[in-house]
Length: 237
Image (tube, rainbow, N blue to C red):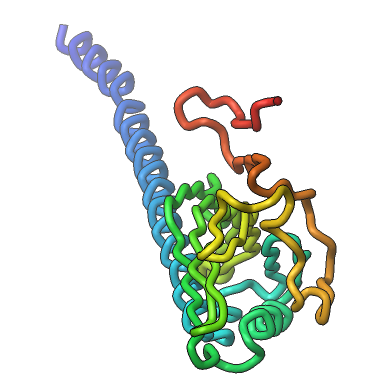
């Protein structure tokens, strides 16, 4: 009888042994999931900080600081100006676009108001895409003043633990004189290649054919509808 009881107890212990192993496996999986979630949350926060820093630096003509935010092979594409590749080209394009000197020129207003962030970090936590609303207040004291409206679809990359801009792509909807306003624009009048892009041609042509106000264009969304999971596309007209 005693031997039978010992045998039953031993069998029970053997049957119970996988449970701690399974429990540890569950804990490891939960830790891995939480770690990934934290990485994505931290990545989204870093991307927002990065993009807002870019806007603030450009606001005040800090071209070196703005260019330093980019990866070595980073790109910038604004409206119909084409694509500029690499930190130096980003720096030189921004500087020439805004007066050709370090800092803003006297009386220059150059507000790149960046709103409505929609950030998606990749599953591995090493890259991200984000959509932003651009509102530009631009001009020169006693000379001219413009409004700009557009949408960013940008990409970011994490290199050696540091988040950097991989590409800035601003789909410009219109640029219009303040006194005229967008309601009085003629078709096609609100967007044209800048004098900078003519004097300093881009490294690559524009990646899309732009429609401008009063025509409508919805830049492609980088991610699906967060509820339905469907890709968001422009409605056919």
